[in-house]
Length: 149
Image (tube, helix red, strand yellow):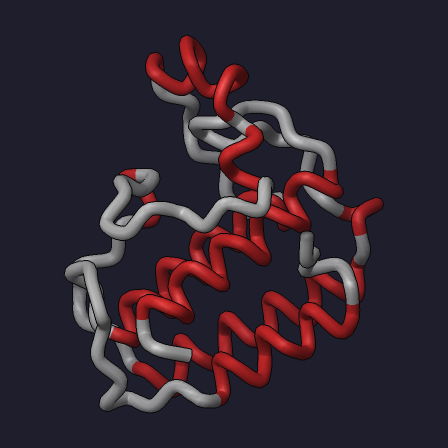
């Protein structure tokens, strides 16, 4: 399984992000490309320790039993629900959002697993840095495939 902490996997993500344009259209879902980039950037804030979304009741109940879905090899389902605090619905600037996300990926990869937040995922709960690294890669991969890259 690929991991955002691995330099080659991180570089692959950055190259794929560079293939996006402001005119890129989703193959599924409601977000436009700038909103998707902002969503991925907001998600990145959780393991970076700059955002601490509260855990919901459902996450407490079933999250620990299904958390391997976050970091296993099986791709995420299309149109799955998201964390309400990182659902982006307002207008965003493509260039700013692309550059912000890329910088966060670079910083997170350079900081390494030892700087990964211990704050739990709002649904899946406590994750190891290794699980976060795999899950972040999988999340980015899901959204880049959503836009055909």
